[in-house]
Amino acid sequence: MGPLRAREVAHSIFDVDYPRLWASGKRAVIFDLDNTLGERRTSKLHPEVSKLLVDLRARGFRVGVLTNRRWRSVESLVAELGPDVPLVRMAHKPSRKGYAALLGRLGVSAAEAVMIGDRTLTDVFGANRCGIHSIRVSGFSS
Ligand SMILES: [Mg+2]
Image 1 (tube, rainbow, N blue to C red):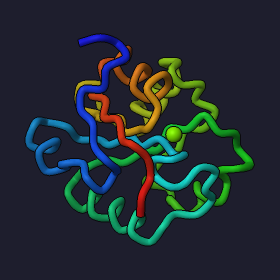
Image 2: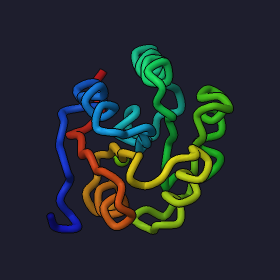
Image 3: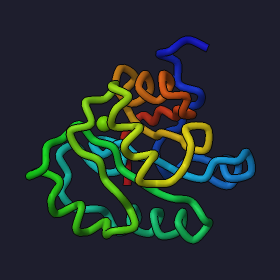
Image 4: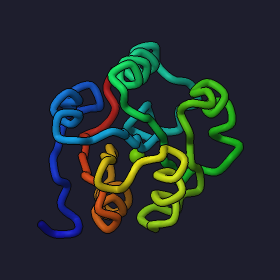
């Protein structure tokens, strides 16, 4: 497997087989923000996204968000996500630093995590170099 190759692909966050990931030992789902968890530059979660996050947490998954965006543009999202869904901003993906910080806050190892994102050179490459199972989505669609 090459470092730029996603371990799996899906149309959107709603098409990922989360029960299979759980069965394979995954315990945390990390989402990219722009064009993955919402539209580009989104500052509010769609209701169906909020529902998905609640469902994932009810299944036992830890959930986190890893974004290269800066603080001001994610402030309202951090409040909306709440304290149980950590968001690491200015992650400088594909740097390993942000991934490591978020894994620490989620309390899981790289092997227990999956990264879902729309960009190969940031989301996928960063996850692969950290040993995190990478899933590339085509984009956000509600
Ligand atoms: Mg993105």
